[in-house]
Image (cartoon, rainbow, N blue to C red; front, side):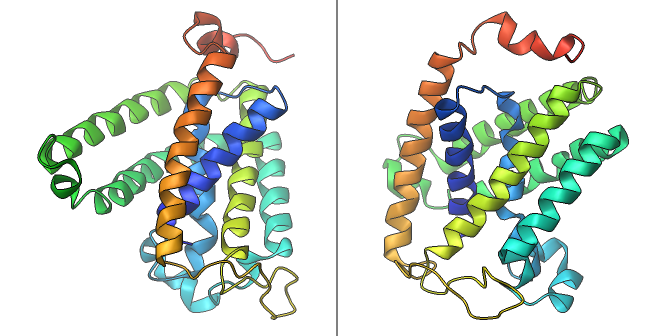
Length: 241
């Protein structure tokens, strides 16, 4: 599955699970979901994340341990332990999120190159890039605010859970492709539903469906948890229970 679809599948999973279990989370933390949603492909030198960490791809084969239950367990255990026990690791994650935000902007820019054809000049590629840049700056502003809230254990717990959701969503996304994943690593046999090939027209259609699903879930989330209220945005400014 392509990076953009991994990202949208991860955010849809987080929003959907939040609504299902009646557990709101701090909406800007979706950035961590997106990061975890593309993280397993760090083992691929040509992936959106892997191109910045090429040495990793030389030691780890693509769709190997990072795409397995072992990888999920190691990732979840490490994240949960570090976020729960070490506040400085949370600072590191938030600082790393600035890079993640930059990466997200680059990913989105690659998919709006033909915006003039899609909108028939109603809005230009330059205008879309400007809006995207403003959105990216707003996320950075929120991340700066998070640096002052990491002392709150509830916030750190939410970050841990969302990272794990994003990681698992990535595996599900690759599991449904023809290529499959070695879910029971170290056994190398790749399993999956084999519904479509990565980058195919079927995935493109699925990608548009995921964008629509995210829009719907975001609307339902905003309505259900009343994100327009001050209480929603200030609940981490009190001591953890």
